[in-house]
Image (cartoon, rainbow, N blue to C red; front, side):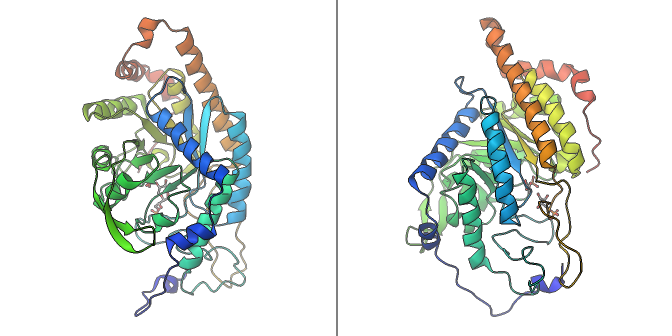
Length: 401
Ligand SMILES: O=C[C@H](O)[C@H](O)COP(=O)(O)O
Ligand SMILES: C=C(OP(=O)(O)O)C(=O)O
């Protein structure tokens, strides 16, 4: 990537369109509004372990969206899979339009919608067009929602969220911002359930602290209905949960890790709703490990482990690529991530099959178990799983991060 694209621009201000204007231009129709509300409620049910819904949440999709046509082709494939597995899985698509960077790099479609689009005509040294970005990002989310899929996204910039908060069914606070007060305030103000990643070092305490903070009211600085800068009191968000994503100390998806997370949540007075990310620190940032992580989770799920959901980074085609610099003869490969590596659609289908089978096994076991067994506290179930080392050993991946 040419360094010029991120050179600071002095005395440079471009007004952004007001969130209210973008929202009314790309408005949700009544049926999409109902879809967003019902998918938020379905997620809330899974988080509170409603007996009426024993399905598994699966948050799956590209690491980031850079090509909206490819994203919508992916969404069509995923919508079919969601339909096929509707008895076992609540499938939510990752529509990640902002990326948190460890240092610097492309910050996502909303910040820079032209970055990886028309390589031949693109002037990659031009100033990123955020005004176009807010329309592009909202439009792709709207199109995904219209295909019947709930939208998940990382809520990174607390002001940009005002362009999207009515479409998103599941918000995520990423590992790099879990400890940020501003993000906890934002989470406390959101109308949808929020997943909170553990820290980049693998520490769960920051995520549990974030859940506690987000559940309380806060003063929040943002936009009012007329898009004027204002402040208000948030209501507090009761629908938060942790996402175990591993970290620099290693992965955290083993039965022991799940059991420890469950115990920590219960100690903090929180419901043990745990989603596990197959990527990032849990895959050593190597997408080829995601299948093995998912297989280990499927084994745990079949045995009744307290796993509410799974996250997978997936795209039409596997791997990742760098964006060729302007003027080079290289082309961008279709349906391949330009941020973290992803598993292919074919592998995604196999992972979804395996997770659905595990949920069926869990459902069958719970209908055949005696009332006494059913009343075993979930923490005990985690304990017994931790002893079944052989179950996970064959799938455990080497992690060096
Ligand atoms: O999910 C994507 C990445 O892991 C995250 O944006 C950090 O990426 P980076 O370390 O390449 O900046
Ligand atoms: C950036 C992401 O994850 P994390 O915050 O866990 O690094 C992501 O899921 O895209």
